[in-house]
Length: 524
Ligand code: CA
Image (cartoon, rainbow, N blue to C red; front, side):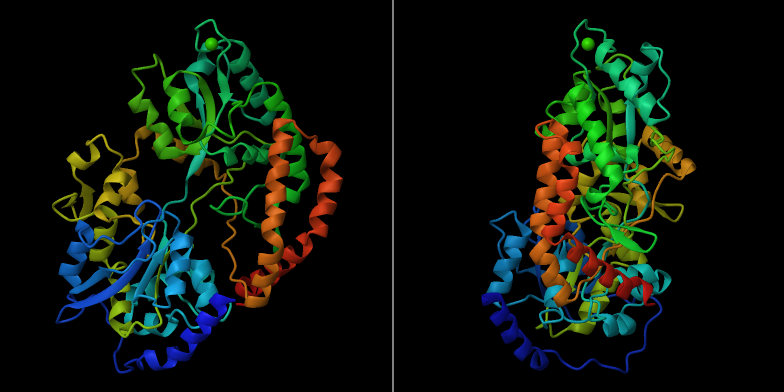
């Protein structure tokens, strides 16, 4: 109630606060720097759990300020919390939206508050002042659709990933060799391999201590339902909907999911899955690999393959490499994860911003060649050099022993709270050969499936979604875990589960998702 009143107040002041756009400015071809002749300060709320405030001393920001003459001033609210939504609520409650707001998940925020007037629509500004952003959107209509709100406006500039792959299946090739086994090609062979890892002492210590299958993120365990043609998500967000032949569906009510969970519960019972899969957490991979206990996982290519370098000499013969997704019961090899070309993260323009033209030019700066290099690689001469016309990370960055992405975050590069195009080439430069080989393997096999690009719900649809979906998802996850751990029987409960979800509004949720999907992607 309080929020609603606040937004109404904002709406009342909106018209007065925003100056008319200068319409005589023609789109520029290149990027003229600096953007403004005399220095201009713009305020920003930038919140991320890893960096709960905008840091004016980040070298990338210092350089951007020098190049553009537009310098951002920290105005982040709620920096004492690492919860970005909590910080956002505090910001909205303060009634003062800074010139720029950057955060993860900003899409939902601006789609909700943008139409109410808290954020400026960017469509015309992009057309007039952002030739680089405009070119990207013109070339990628599905990205334009994905960032367009239900009222037809664009309210944020997104973080735009590059490259296709995130995760793949990894297995101890040296364990396979030791036991005289081939790389498993289908779900039945995989079952046999995991049983052998469990029973035949591949680490050779005389103890039955191997953990055949493990994950850092427990959500990757139920994702194995893809081996029975089930689905768990249609995007790079867990539990997301997916689209099948123009129909929006959810994996957790599918028959393949039912069959998969039933079989995975058996695998868990047989000791093939880490008994602590739901609790061991982020250090699982590091621990189970360095202790020579873990046999197989599903995880990010670059960091997982990196263990061949970091613990290769600690565990004799250690050979942990990617293998193609085993064929499912119906013969389908599927990799459910992939990189989305557009994230729901990025930045937006507050309604009281009195410099929309300059701000949009500033947003566009990060899409220009100079800005794109700065945000992806850091400061030229410090983190990278231009070699044969292309940015190349310096040897001291690549060889520092600290992960390159962590080094980038520390200087304000590669942040997820800014709208910009990522350059996969940066990541490729610190991805080892085993990972590149794995990615090539997946590329060759063409295992990726279509991505659900997400929808922008209108207020009525949002109300249905907000009312029904959270308790439904809670129940789905509660049941999923109970079934997998064997504390309840999925086969016995399945029909009752589907009926219960319907009584909780499952069909209404699917209906509004379908409506929004058709409006957004099938209309044009
Ligand atoms: Ca053993």
